Image (cartoon, rainbow over all chains, first blue to last red):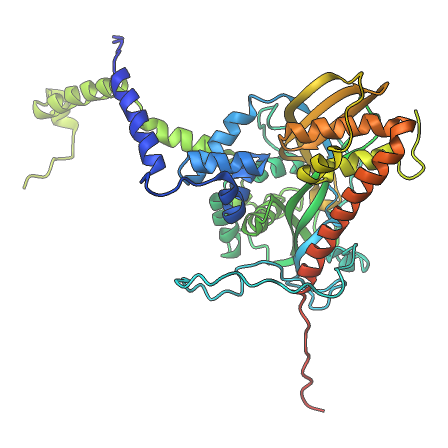
Length: 368
Length: 148
């Protein structure tokens, strides 16, 4: 039986009005300006850009305000908006070696060329709520800028051939998950696109599981760098490459033990993470999960959840996950009526057992 | 095409895109658009897919998209183009106009002097300051030697 249901327009209209009011809050309090969100909630703006998979601080700030600070809703808004824009093309590969560094640390070498640069980080705060909210102190710049070329820390190991070298090879055209569906097995480039868009909380948990022993990888943070990278494109109309601006990125190069296998001698291997804006937790988590997902390539045991690419890649996207979990709120009246009617039939049969069931059923409903 | 004694076209187009939009607007105030100015392709915002490299050096992967505004203009007998990150249409229009006028021999010198050079100095100054501020947080290790 199919029952068409119509109604609720009035209720929905009132609900939208209530939402608008709730989102605005007390009108005696000034409304947030987008510039305030962009400047003062920059880490939230970065997360929404990264998982919304669209670098635009202003759109991200708008999405955060509209979603009343619900990051996953803001990410959804950004993903929906991008579908309305034409695709002009693909940029040239980002050159993170030429990053104008604002922060760069290594957990593996104390003395690195260019030095350890802490930059703006919560790492050394005491995590005490600041009720005083003291005015911001100005930073006195150093006499000399950082060296223009900060060598990658992992290149130090590369010189000794103690770490795997990652070459572009034939530099194949990568799969674009915004155009093609995810299929398995997915190659590393495809996995990295999926992880780039993936939910930070999910990747953090997966990464944490590898540290706790589900996929032993013994990681070190070889290098984390954050700063500005130029974005370059080569439009057909020009026939030569130009810079179109610069963006802030966080890159994490994880170093992991490898005992050798598949014809490869024992050496350090790498996991890679990249995130828009200041997204250190995301970049580190991504790097650990990237490394765990390389188990097949490196002939490692693959019995941990973080090594199961079908599991990880199918559940990393919070827009998909949120949609599927939350769709349960929508009317399932007919589905549920069918279940209810089935259960009533079963319950009636149980109350008045047929002769066959009497002889066969062994369980009893406990009575008080 | 008239060529610059100072900069290749790719360099000035890059600089116009990297410039602060307000500073570009202020610098271009002094220049009236040529009489024949016609917008061939009005400013339009779209997407580029950012590409990264696996491990920073390996094969390419698609990282995520970025908003870009492009614009094309005919001015002073030359066609100027702009591709500028973000959705600031005014920025793209001014960059395209400046690109056209920089290609014309009779306006190149003035634009170079009053637009390109000041914008480059401002960009260099901002980058230098940001780098020196980051350098202020560089760790100086003091090693304590124990025993003899």
